[in-house]
Amino acid sequence: MSYKNAKNLLPAELVELIQNYVDGEYIYIPRIEDNKKSWGSSTDTIRELNLRNCNIYNDYLTGMDMDTLGRKYYLSSKSIQRIVLKEKRANF
Image 1 (cartoon, rainbow, N blue to C red):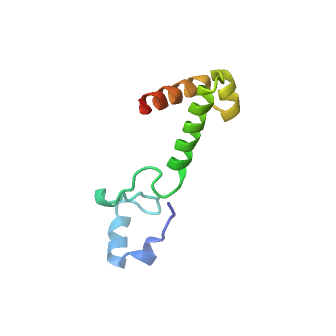
Image 2: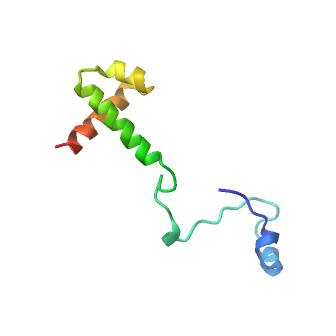
Image 3: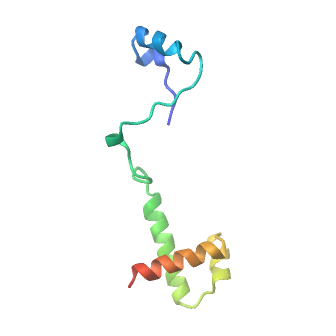
């Protein structure tokens, strides 16, 4: 998200009207519901996390213990347990 100057985007009358409510403050204008993007849809984050989780599960299946997996992937043992359980359920 980047900031835009209202004077460069909106008609002067609208800027004056908004200034009656907020003068010199930052405001957030939410997206129209139909224009919202799902999390990670504009990056490869979801794909990268899915690949990481698959690798964690494969390492688990080869006998690597939770603590070692946590150190290898820089995650807590609890996070590793959650990922392994989720992958186990997805593969059945």
